[in-house]
Length: 147
Length: 166
Image (cartoon, rainbow over all chains, first blue to last red; front, top):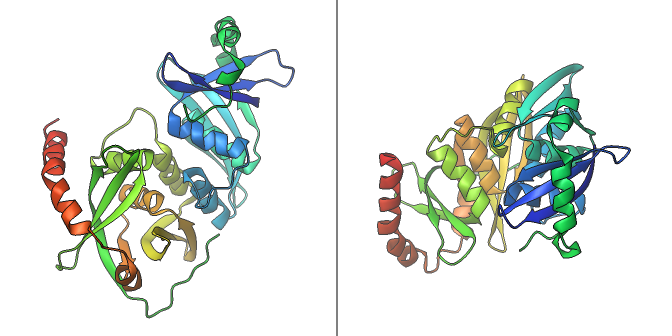
């Protein structure tokens, strides 16, 4: 999945990370909090903060021991509980770590690791709902994080 | 990353997280550290609201339905068998504090540069000790601090009471 964008959801006072598949057929919205949206936005826009932010710190720890993020998989999106797996490679062994999709994506962006979504997650998510959403949004709603 | 190895004679003073205070009217919080060697001293650090929240969750040992960012860091480290040996606040420049996280894995030590908020959030979750160097203690700016803290204490103790009761 590619990160298509990040937008503000005024109804829920939250942010939506929109992932799109390679052919652009499937879209997957993931609702995240403000801090998590900030962490994703900084990586998206290649902003180098003066001090390492939390996910930069996470990446530094992995780098210190030459551990690599191989991929991230969004495995389930329930109403309130989101699940993702981070696949790591360290000393020729693979490790799978449970994470929230927002943390997993923020780390994947900093590691140039691919993001995948399980088919079941895409099927479950009604993309019609999202399309309606997108239609109602004004261009100004995109990419704004400080509102 | 930040390979700032402190000189061997750098004196360390142990501190512990005392509380997280709300800074009124701004989107920041104040993390107050307390000196542990018997000499009373409070060491405040201004941090972001999200960072303050992450520390508060660890202080109150609140269980969240999903792992928060620092829980994830801890979990990744457990998978890789990396331990946090200690956290040292070892520098201050333009009122910004710098922390170093000392890691160990099978005898291999590494240091990672971090903001104090991230380092302390992780230290609380991994029960690692926290130190401030004498150098930083000597160079911090304490102007107006005591009076400011005195003003805040009644409010914070009532907050802590609420947390305990809930």
